[in-house]
Image (cartoon, rainbow, N blue to C red):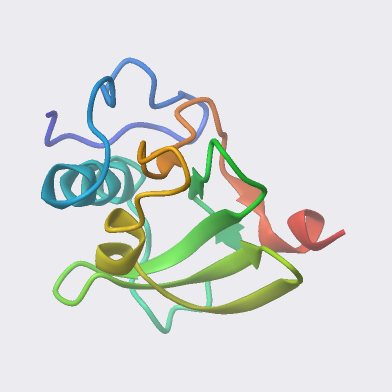
Length: 121
């Protein structure tokens, strides 16, 4: 994977290949790479912009990442699940979710950074 960063106007499709990667350590590396490429700010910066979107392709849950600690894989962002709520998310835990068809969660490579407020509507 690429170690550079990309502008918010560019999508991740040309930089991340998720084909055939289901869940586990390789998926965690994909999630981390998406956060690196998008230059997700550190936890505590109170960033109002969701930089990375992770979703369940077999369900309705979606995680929007606005802050990330690369040492602990803790993130802050918005979760669309049974409710919409702001809170802390762990990339490692997300990477281990197999989902109902055992294909794991995915990074939305076409997602463009968006302010959290508009995602809460």
